[in-house]
Image 1 (spheres, one colour):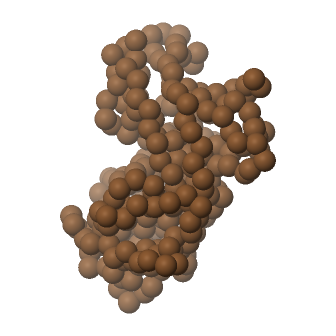
Image 2 (spheres, one colour):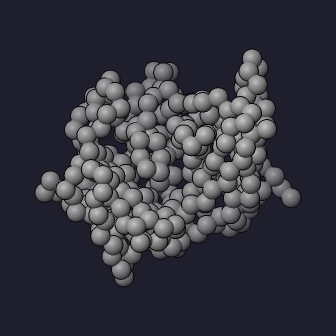
Length: 262
């Protein structure tokens, strides 16, 4: 088989915003009070959309939640109304997404209607995750995590990986496409700079198959994380929400693998 190995070094220098499915930071620059929408629909039970407002870049990660919004997601045939639970957290517990289907989110808050459409890609199977001795740290006995899967030939695919160590989400961002790996067996080292992974740790990795706008969003954030501190001023990543606001709406597949580091 034709294997292709990739090293992804997503150095987290800037802090990142908390979401139900992904930790990122949208408090970029010194803008304040802007609406942040974090919308996720996947092919598992229960969907979550989070509304908050950003804070100045120099502030701590305390984000005012936005309450009282009206949120629906439709697939062109059926519609699902999201119910607010904890302040700013809106859920549709019975909704299940399906790959190949386009979903449209509508958020009405403070007299403004925001919309976004995302198409859930077809699922690519995550074969396994493994651990090995870190090649980036010679003073500690640290481990790094790798993911392994077969990229389908003849299709454009984009991926986002989310890592948890002992049930705590790693803040680094891992976005990847198949521009150079179409149809190959792929091995990706998820090199992170957020936590020390050592023997006995439990590591879970979620693999999301994402559409092109979401790949642009996550890869832009990942690039900013790599460049920040080198004279690059962080800026808002390109949103897929109209009218433009901070955040995103992602319809993606989800699957996880878990290992205990030996």
